[in-house]
Length: 230
Ligand code: CA
Image (cartoon, rainbow, N blue to C red):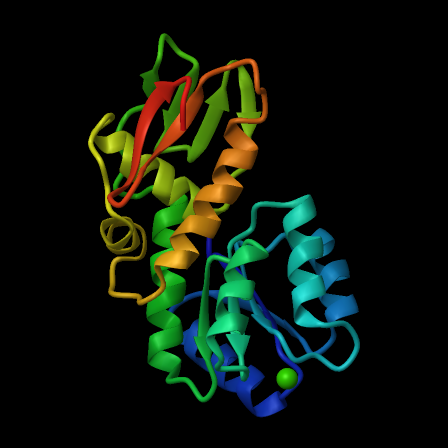
């Protein structure tokens, strides 16, 4: 079945450009120029991925993204005209999976969409792995994480970071390495990794009575290990 992409963009030219490219790649495409309609369409369409312009006429794209993230795990690719680094970081802090700055090349958008969906569907799947006598279970093929028996909803990027760390538990991964593992290409901001790790921890280390799952190694990066200390 064709995967569905919801394109939320108020500029008709960009919307139709993306539609053409996506349809050519075999995606089924639903578009809207309104943030409010986008939130309604999430329910009815059930897209596999959302392309979201931050500059919408009715609701700020950031609000749409935050709303979307509260209720689902659907991957989000943000389109932004705001090229400043602060805005980029902010986009990632609200839990989006990737972004492109306008003007963009449709080819680049396609590559990023394909990469996000590849990550989130776990095509390069390995079997489920258990860590710390089953305290943490990662099922790559189903993209599911279970912490002490409770399923946890992670974004595609958070899942990517966790499964990268889990590929060799105990090994320290630098932020750059994690970026490369997760995104598959170079990306400058190490701070973005920190904010994804922060979100990941909030979700998988919610119970203070239990050991931490992701450890910070000062000056080096992160590693997976069930520890009492950070
Ligand atoms: Ca716009």
